[in-house]
Length: 187
View 1 (tube, helix red, strand yellow):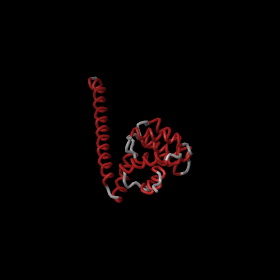
View 2 (cartoon, rainbow, N blue to C red):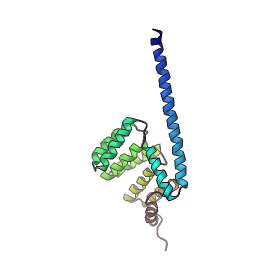
View 3 (cartoon, helix red, strand yellow):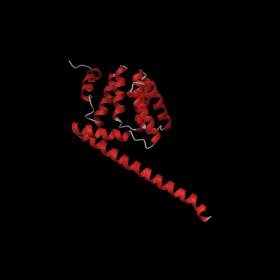
View 4 (cartoon, helix red, strand yellow):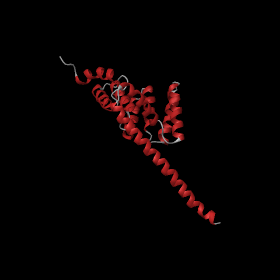
């Protein structure tokens, strides 16, 4: 009988141990991510490509199997061109894990494909509130701002992107295209 009385105490200790391991894992992942972000700012173009791949893998890990599953389903649907299905999966993800920036960024991409720029901007704003260094979200923001005729704001987003990921693909070309629109032509 005394063993039965101890069971809740043992369960509490087990839950505490699991939570400590999870939180410790989160701290280690965040430390690793912070280090990679610093490396990315200082890397040459070849190293930047490798580092950004590592960062994006970390960004896609939510810590929840169900959230990761919803992200995969949404991204798979996008890849197949099933944009409405992707929005459904990614909306379920943002409802299930609102603190997971990757869900918001991915759904923004689906909204862009549907031409829903306002909704995409809203999702990117949410993602950047969660992760201000999410360079994919910043690039997406710049692309949308350019698309809706706000080249100065788009250029500003690209300047911010350059401080985080100086070797982001097509960044130089995008900035060269936007700069005269944002700052005007010199005579």
